[in-house]
Length: 533
Image (cartoon, rainbow, N blue to C red; front, side, top):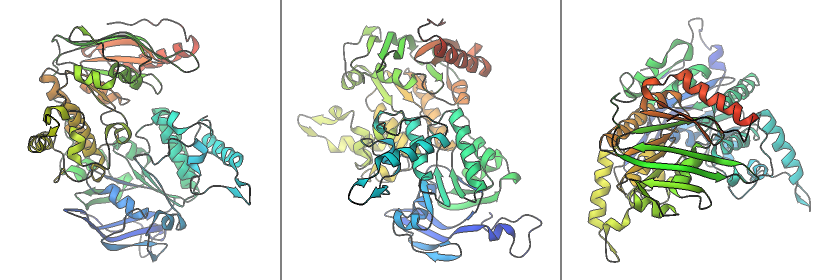
């Protein structure tokens, strides 16, 4: 295990790399009740470089970043900035030392505008007259131009899709003009084109001497953008190297102690009775047109149907319509051959549908409630005797699902917010499964989780399919949709372009369908696009 400063063969004494160290974490330990999140961690951050930090969910990455950003304080150890020990007791302290952060779970106010979010707590003011809203909006527009987006600075954040909210979070950090910028999963909600834009922005920041601390579970992305890499496992550093000296296999071995885990077992079920059918499902777009445009498809017992498409294809909106989140949607939903008469989420859950939402923090969890309470929120009626909850039965079910899904939660009474992203995702999955669904809808189930947690989620999907559940999952990851799907539905601009059987699916065919549909929908918004079953 290497934990010291990385030096090239030409380095001697105080190398250029040594002189470029702008921040040092020295022997940092962080203890929570019942958990040691960090164990004597040493971490160095270099100026004008992308310093990658990687590890499985629960490895301690977010805890380390919170300490550097002033959100948490270490139990032991110290932080050194520009060669001097500093005390970071708050985010304000961190900002004063030039440290900014893009949080994985977005830290935005949905009821404020884009510009107001970017400058929150740092408002541009003038005496007596107060906040200079027009100036904030002008600067916000410049940041959007830098990020190659035309998001309206006056738009409410609540009205933006999650990918654009991620762009606002990044713009908020850039506005602080930080010289040490932490990016925690900044691409988790971005399309491939938006990722390319972000990487161009990062290259520009590097050229200006900004030190980037970059966290991502997309390993190919790390190889592409990183200069140095540090690997955490179980709160300890297991590897520290120059990026040009390692490959993906090295990263995986340092993360999990072995080579990569399988994406899926490769066994495909399907062929059972029809579990779900939707006919002419449509969701009007404010201002005209459709977010979901007369989509018809089906999924059978034991089948995994993957839905793929570019940003704005209407994939998430389709799942929301199936789940009853949009009362003004039209079309028909059939569950086990019977037309659903329920018009809300609770009714659809009762009839056998369950959903894993894309944004687990906003739509899947109540972070301040205990882990166990979150897991049983949608299925409380099965634990009730009259007006009373049978606590023992509820706790037994919670512990059973913690074991079945390998959730790292020693105490179900702890807040859900105390868990890593991957374990939070498993809690959301447990909540859905406790309703005993016939059909499970999963929106970006691997968003923001590491390779080990992904493997657990994918194995769970295959096991559930083998038990006869129909699964519909949305993903922007081409490798995932190819590996897991029995059939692949390609959407673009709200329309279903085609449905391809696994035996006939190729990456080229799937990408071509998404791209062709995207161009057609843009040039001929009312054209009927051919679909194949």
